[in-house]
Image 1 (tube, rainbow over the protein chains, first blue to last red):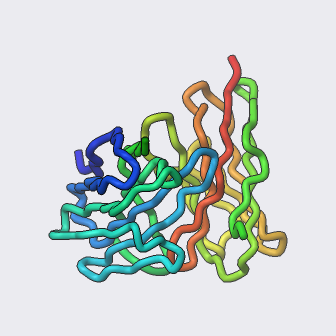
Image 2: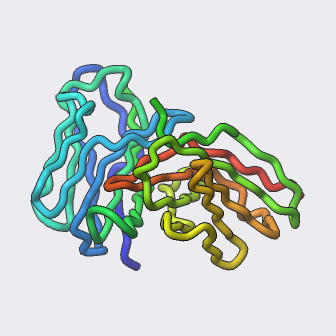
Length: 115
Length: 109
């Protein structure tokens, strides 16, 4: 089955210790997204890639970086995690960017704990 | 400032009855709306959508209604089933998807 996979499902890191979250997809979609979701909050878009074009949201902290080495994989790097970065991180893909049918397919998420 | 608002954090409905989940938005430029469903420990999954040129879209037990003048949409589930218990996110899309905070739906036996 075509799908979006996130590894690991649970990640524990220490305050200030860099961490990388991984997302892969078998849907061959052009667009990949990273969202941050804190408890009882809406998923918040951090950035997205359209193919290799990186699009950062204006309010995404510099602490968050992303890499997309190929169509299938996308990584979220948190350079110096703070306690406030503890959240669920969702990866999503879509086959198109822009107006109209913008259905996104989500992975199961990685829950990040910062000690 | 929230552009997509789901004012009910939770809703309980008897099995077999109608579930109505509500959503309000503030930006009249939004032209596409989606509902996602999320089970615990899973990512959101797409449920149903509606374009702003329509006022109703139906898919089986799920119907979404859009009232553009009121900037309001609702999701109707009828009849409600135990498997419908989940968190439902309303989302709006001008170019990117903007999510509401979600409503947790409990279907009571």
